[in-house]
Image (cartoon, rainbow, N blue to C red):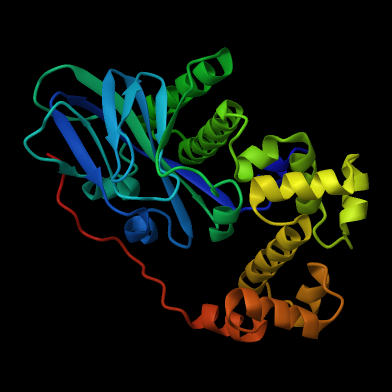
Length: 333
């Protein structure tokens, strides 16, 4: 399998579509930091990635410190790190509070929300992609704070968009399985967006997605993610992917800023952290599962990475306070 598929297979994911809108110019809304509403949108999810799919008309996406992005029908804008952002058209007198739409999540209401100044119409669908925090070091690593991709450039993208629009349009019927279908389509939309963004990266681009596209680095990433507990050396990893040792080291460091074995150590520890949270395995069992031969070596490495030994890390997670329950917000006018 390819590196992106291997990485996605190792990250627990979820997705949702929760807002269906037709706004007339001038209009605008602002969304807060995703982490402030994550416990409401997706309890237990560590990273929330908002997105907005424009299905008709035009809009502008704005985030502090980045150039504005002009959006047209078929564009999807992604906010990979959950930064506060704005979507607008024209010069509205005030920006609506995007947090006010949270009630749609709980009601399952995907009927069209209409508002604005009565000018040209823009239709869009909003949602999110949720994943574990170690995605920050995988497919989210190196992404800009805001980017867009057109999904109408080929038949596959047009099919995906039309399928999402169909599911949203029939949501009012409350047909069995509709919520799950929307969730799966949201995941598919995010993955397809990553694929298209990855294909469009310039040759000089660095970062995880750029590395995953490179034949040598991508092959190494796929092997490490597929079999992280294997006793990898640079030599046998290079042999596995048919590259020279020097080529593998040089290219891996160029794209990811570290050696293959340094990356492997961090990845093993991320997997161990997840197992500490999701299983009752002993520390020794976890150490063996992720490729360590001694509990002492695992404990030292884990503490260097997370600041706590594994057992204490697990206790801290078990006793951590997790915010829960909906927050109240005014209705969107």
